[in-house]
Length: 436
Ligand SMILES: [Fe+2]
Ligand SMILES: [Fe+2]
Image 1 (cartoon, rainbow, N blue to C red):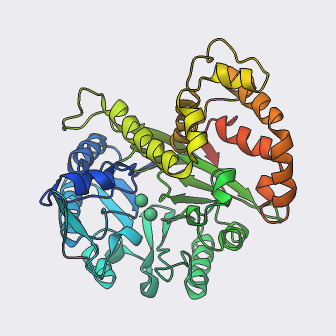
Image 2: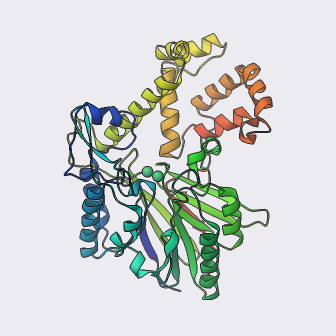
Image 3: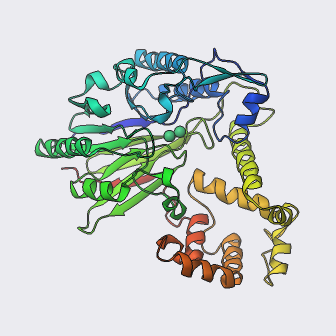
């Protein structure tokens, strides 16, 4: 048997070059509702890449897109310099680009006081050659029209790197001729007795029930593509984009399963990346987070800093969405009071928690992964009772939504499955693959 092979997977680095201005109200305004720590990207990425470079036994790094903040040309220059540095240290990098990597109408900006100052954008058709040393020129097959390729990343293991920019508008997916090429590459690999797995920017699978309702959370035509891939014998795909840690399975009618390993954003809570090790027919997946970075973190640890940024974003977004009375109820409301209002008792260990804070935490947990409130925890029990009390309302919604959105046909399990994940495998897991 071949010896084990490992790679790192890093995604959504969203680098904003250190030459750009990044202070003042114009920046803060954008930053307040952003999970990403954009001004901090040079420091975070340097720290993260240094962590990765310390592992002298792992030479391959995969990056499925959203390399820079918003298509700034100079950000690509700064990011590519960092990739060349890794290359000098013996790392081989395979990447694809995604929708934040190009901009053709002068939309990218730097921030100076109250002002947004336009900067040069990266034309999409320059990306392939710009990053030729990071996958494209090494390809054993290339689909130029879509900026996709296949690379031999180890003995017996091939990477199918699929760009999914689609039409750069509403269609975020794989074109039919791109898919035909991909399927023939899968077949070629199998005929040669080799294992092949894929990488796209957009997730192939919705990673939580609510992601079925969010158009941007997965590839357009995801179900069709998931069926085609799995039935062609592709059983593993690595994705990014949602800035969330999640591992999700999908099984076709014919009984073939494909697993989507989504990795969180490198520069936003929880700033995770993965190490993936192939050994025979098992794949061992382990996750790491960035321990620290050189920046004024206002006395916080890196972990606290990232969490603070995430919570601030959700807090403001909640304020935007919630009607005023709901906001008022939530603001000073503890779980104890909420229970009293709806005639149920909340466990002592959580009764003093503010309902709003709990709401923010539950959203954060979905993105961080390994949602902790499984059956038996006081939070699960409180939520289950709360949902029961709300049945007069939720049953009406369920009846209305049954045909349109099947995931909403049972609101209790819809909510409960998102606060507690029985599998606890969003970070670390061992998968069985079809490798001979
Ligand atoms: Fe992203
Ligand atoms: Fe994205």
